[in-house]
Length: 287
Image (cartoon, rainbow, N blue to C red; front, side, top):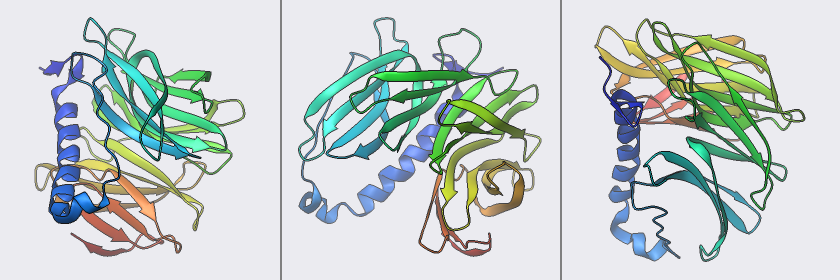
């Protein structure tokens, strides 16, 4: 039996909380002089229910904040805000349908938001929204990654394509799913699903490595030796062909959530820990 809250499995909610707590612990650890660095703070409560922000992007003089607000029936609605970056003043906002957004990305002058469309009872759809800088919706698309639906959790780009990662629901549980979309027609050209382990597994993040021209997908897989979810990193080429897989069994309990690269293509992977992986996929250190 799966325990759900507002249609969302409890396991997924717990994973999201764990990843959030990692960020909280890091911010507290460095909070001694935090007042010195805070220029402004804005608080917003879009509804009388639980609301939360999930991602932010910056373009020009503005930051764009995406998140969730609840409607009068407590269903999750996608909320997008445009704020002046120097003082946080609200410039514009938009509510877009039933759903949960997870990440945003600017490519040229277009804002792309990815997440889950939860408007159809019983099935989740991947959702991709394209907006201009004034929050006008230009195009939106949905995708069903597998028979049971899924969530689009992360997006990056090489300038011509969007690369989107998340999970799909197969008959045996959650599996990694990645799609490659053409930006000019906002349509998928490749899609790939796989399960790194027989149990549930999930891709949390995808980043394009400008140095190697490859994609790094990070998340978790189930390790039966420790009976826990452990880190996994998969390197793909831009046609979504597997290049290398890296299991980090010393970091378990949650998944790797994102990766950034330095000028030499070395990846700094974070989650409930941090790891440095060199550009060829060799492990340098983990904490």
